[in-house]
Image (cartoon, one colour):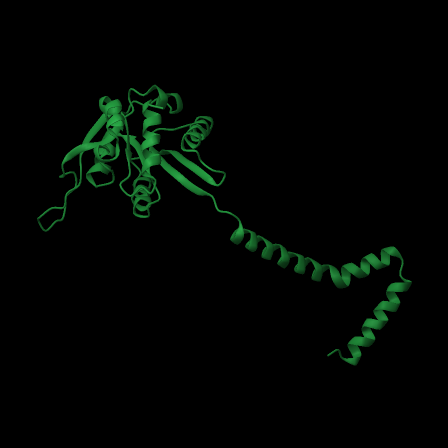
Length: 231
């Protein structure tokens, strides 16, 4: 309930406002209402932003690719991404993420692959031969013998790359790194003119493999076929 003093002050302000010039009214507004208006507008803007972030359709990555020790320039990366999205029939809210330029000699960069793999957030890794063998020995990749169709396997047989996988050890160390069966875990991109079109030149033999925890196995297989020159 309004106090008598507050009502009296409000009536006096009304009377004063009627007799003011435009400039005086503008000054009165700034003195009494501007700060309050700005605060209310700010609160409304923040609320609107929170609501929009909550209700807006979220984008979804339908393929995530990490490239070690080789760089794709912005134009090349954009062009390859667009080509892959077209191949996969990506919708308006579906995206392909290709990140290049990571370093296999940087432990933080290699640790990223482990974290993303554990969280089912990476689908394909492309890296030099030595790093690929290290990843394969730690159980990062699917055997392509299990994911390629007979037709795909025959078409890619000349580019398949075999490496020793992971197998749990019977001793107390539990070190089974690269002690597993040697299987076709990767595609050698050394002879792929398609990959070389997009990637910067490299002295390393680049190998591509499908991460064992991928959520988009079919998309990953299509991507390997594309960069290997099948599509």
